[in-house]
Length: 55
Image (cartoon, rainbow, N blue to C red; front, side, top):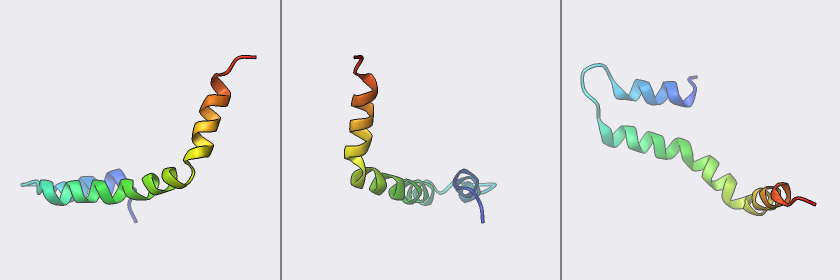
């Protein structure tokens, strides 16, 4: 039960770093956020546009 940055740091190891495993862990940790953005993209974009328009 680690947070994502701590879990990725434990993948680095003490002596050697397996960059393939580390990059796969980073990709898997970003994937749920990216999928949520894809489904909720119109709300993000409309919020950004609505906040930038000065009336």
